[in-house]
Amino acid sequence: MTVINIIFGSLKISFYSLKFKLFVKKKDSQEYGTRLRKTLESLGPMFIKFGQLLSTRTDVIPYKVAKELQKLTDQCIPFNSNLSEEILKKELGCELNEVFSEFEPKPFAAASLAQVHRAKLINNKEKVIVKILRPNIKSEVKKNLRLLRSVSKLISFFFKDSERLNINKVVEDYESTIMKELDLKLEAANTNLTRENFRDSDILYIPKVYWDFTTSKVLVLEEIYGIPCTEIDELEKAGINKKALAENGVQIFLDQVFRDNFFHADMHPGNIFVDKNNVINNGYVAVDCAIAGSLSNEERYTLARMLQAVIKRKYQNLAKLFINAEWVDVTTNPIDLENTLRACLEPILEKPLSEIEFGSLLIYLFESTKPYGLSVQPSLVLLQKTLIHIEGMGRQIYPKLNFWGLAEPYIEQWLRNQFDPINIKKYVLENKDEILNKIKDAPIMVQELVDDIRNINKSSMSNKELMINLENKIKSVRFMQILLVISILVVAIFGFLTI
Image (cartoon, rainbow, N blue to C red):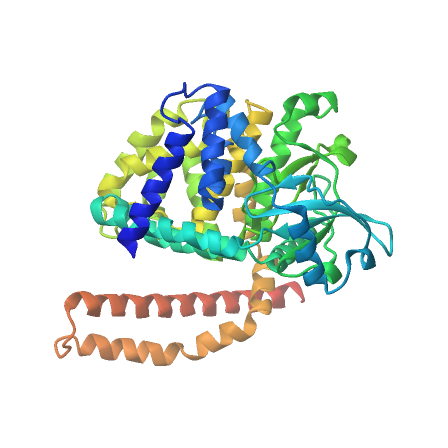
C-alpha cells in the first residue's frame, strides 16, 4: 500500500504541477504565485496548510508570491450553499429559521477544512458567524495523510540525516493535530479557554462561543470586526501604531507559552486580525483555535534557559542544556558541542538583535550540529511553527521588530518567578497528593536500585539494557528527592512567614 500511495501521490503532484505550469514561469512574479496557489488548492487541505505557512515567510519566498499564497487562508473554493444548509439543519436538528432570523447562504470565507457564513440569532438578534466543516473532508484529509506517511517512510529509508529530524514521529503528531481540527467542539473548547486566559487583556480579544448551537461539525461564534494583520495600507489608514502592534504580537505569544502554557498554534494571517474596536491599544482579535499546543513544565523551563543562554552567548550552558535535555546524543563531548555552537551562533549574534530571525537561527543550528545527532523534538514542533508564524507576521507589520529584545526581559522574569517561594508553595499545595504518593514509594525504589546494582553480574540482560533501566530508576529517585526537599522547604518557609 505504501508503494501505491507514493506512486499515486507523486503522479498527482506531477500532474497538477504540469497543469498549472509551475516549472515555466518566473518564480518571483505574482502570476507564479497564482499558479502555485492553485496547485496547492488542487492537492488538498494538507498542502493548503503548507502554503499557509509559506505565506508568512517573505525571507524564503518572494513577496509577490507570499501575497498570493495569503489567499489560501480565506479564499479557497467554497462548497455548494445547499450542502451547507443541509449539514446545518441536520446538526441543529431543526429548520434554520428556528435558530437564525437571518442566514447568508453565500459564505464570506472558505478555508481548507471549512467555510463560514454570516447569520443573526433569532432570540437576541446578535450577529454571529457559522463555521461548517466541508462535506467528506475527513476522507480527503486521510488520503493526504497516507501520502504524507508514505513519503516520510521513504525519506527515512533513503536519507540517513532524516533520523535526527525524527520525521515519522513528527508526521504522527501532525496527524493527531490535524484530525483534532476536524472536531469543531474541540475548537470551541480551545476558543473558550483562550478567551478566559485573556479575559482582562487590552491587546487580545477572543470571540464568544455559542455552545447551544455548536456540534462536532458546526461552530457558532460571535462575529468580530477586524483588519487582516498583513494589510499594511489599511492598518496605516486606521491609525494603528505598527511598532506597538508587532510588539504586542510577541507579548501575546510569550504570555500564551510561558504564563498560560496553552498557545494558539495556527496563527497564520487568515486567523489574526487587528481589532477595529481597540485601535488605541493596538490590539488583536484571534479566531480558529482548532490547533492549540502546550509543553510540559520541564520543556518550558529548558526552552526558557536555552533562549536565555543564546541571548547571553553562554555557549557552555547551552551545550549542557542540549545534552541534559537529550536534544543531542547524551555521550556528546560538552566542550566540542560548546565550540560548535559558538562557531555557529557568533556570526549571527554579531548582528543587531532586531535583524536576527529565529527561523534562520534554527536552520543554522540543524546544519552545525549534525555530527551530534540534534533531534527535532515532536512536542516542540507546534511551538516552532507558531514562533515562525508570529515572527514572520511581526516583521511584515514592522520590519525592525526586535523579537529578542522583547523576549529577554520576559524570560528573565519568568525564570525568577519559578523560584519564588510563594509560587513554589502554590505548586506544592496544588499537587500535594501526587507528591505524597511519589515520596511514599521512594524507599522501595531505592531498595530495588541497590538490589539491581548487587545483581549486575547475575543479570542476563545486555549491559546497554541494564544501564538504561538503572539510569531511569536513578532519575526517578532523584526526582522524588527533589520533591521531598521542595516540600520541606515550602513547609519551613510557609511556617516562617506565618510566625
